[in-house]
Image (cartoon, rainbow, N blue to C red; front, side, top):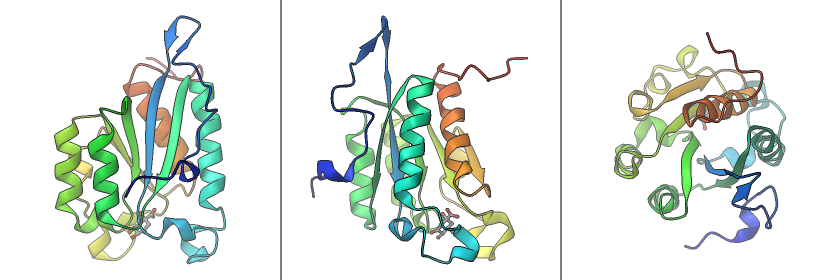
Length: 177
Ligand code: DQA
C-alpha cells in the first residue's frame, strides 16, 4: 500500500534540499501498531499526548537541528517493512522508530533494518524494562545506534537528538567533552 501524503508530516513541501550550503538530512520517524491511539490509550502508562502532538514536536525539533523529519504510523508489520525498505532510495539518512509491540516479536523488522544499513534509534514511551517480562527484550535494541525508554514523548525528542548527533548534526546545546 502506498503511503498517502496526508499521513506524513513535514516541515514544508518546499523545504530545500540545500540550506545555506549545507545538505539537510532527512529523518524517517516510524511509529508502530496502536500508537495512533496515543492520547486515549492506557493513559496511565502512555499519557495524554497524541501522536499528532509528538509528530509536530519532532518536525519542530528537526528544523532546529537542521533535519527534515517525516513521520508515519502503521498498524501493519508489512507496511512498516515497506517503509524501512524504501528509506535509502527515498533519501533518508536515518530512522527513529518506536516499533511498539513488534519490537518484542518481529525478526522481520530487525532483518529489514539490518538490510538497509541506516543508523536508527529505538524509542519507547514507557520504561519497557520495568514492565512485563515479555516487554523487556526487543529484537532491535542490540543493532540500534541507541535506545531511549521511559520518558514519555520526550523519549522521541531525546532519540531524535541522539540520531542527529550520530549523523553529525548535533544541536547547539550538545556537550562535547
Ligand atoms: C511501547 C511499549 C511496547 O511494549 C508496547 O507494545 C507499545 C508501546 C512504548 O512506547 O512504550 O505499544 O512501544
